[in-house]
Image (cartoon, rainbow, N blue to C red; front, side, top):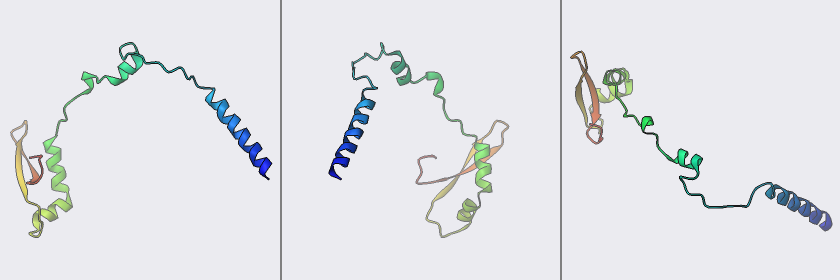
Length: 106
């Protein structure tokens, strides 16, 4: 039994060595600007950065349809301090959005 384990380990070792020989061990430093692929992948495209635009009309509509928020607004036992904010829209209407005092959003 001992000899079969030794043979099995030798076969596994030779397979592992064969797999390792498939890879190059030539590791060299390449300056970022000379390595065009790495240089391109590490740069942030300015065109890709865009500010997030909040559609206050949709936001207010979603809040008015939210049953859980409506329950919180109508109950007196919530520890949340919620404030109503109005945002003007293009056509001179206003969107009412609720924010918590504790949040940094409003």
